[in-house]
Length: 316
Image (cartoon, rainbow, N blue to C red; front, side):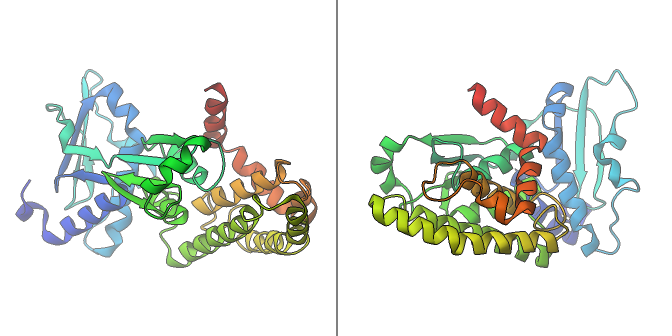
């Protein structure tokens, strides 16, 4: 399809949607695949379609399909004997059609991702792992053993992990990575205010997590003093503030009234505090100080995809 057929404005919206979702392809994309492959990639395709629809209000003359709430269900082929399901996303009308044709996997591909972090289920890299799993985004999960870190450290941009490699380009900083994968997976708010609330929570969790991490290598007496002061001081303060913000947002999630990367970030911090691995910080501190955060922790832990992720990790 030529530029003249779809219009410049529509192409701009379409290209922006592709960039946000991490897709690479032509201005008019046709995804052709056998039925089983289509079903396997269904979530990724539907997220891409939804991103296009989200951009639609920017052009008054463009409207999404009448029943957009049904997602791709309304676009199933009428003929049961169709061997291939194909989706053509037309930028001009933001319509989706299914037709037959030859499979060309080069026309619609995702950015190649590699997430690198320590080989344990926690810390700064875990929220991004969870987000990518929840969103069904394929990625290479490179895990670095603690003994290998000194030799690997100089290979990272800022001498720290996690890092995320996107089509060969390595980026770092955990919350920057969280925002990026949050956008890819639909776990980051599109509304500016809700995005601000999401960012505040992630940055605050990073702040208090860093303060705790700074005590790890202290001598025992100094560690005991520092952690006891943190437990009665800053950690309690942060727990109270997190709980207040959670309550202000409706009591279930920190932003956008739904699961976002901010919830995953706090989930990992609370999991760390309650694990009993931090000497001199009571493992029941969260339960006593911020019961609403305990419910939030249980809610995130009970998310089907989060539960599935850790079930698979235990099996591995």
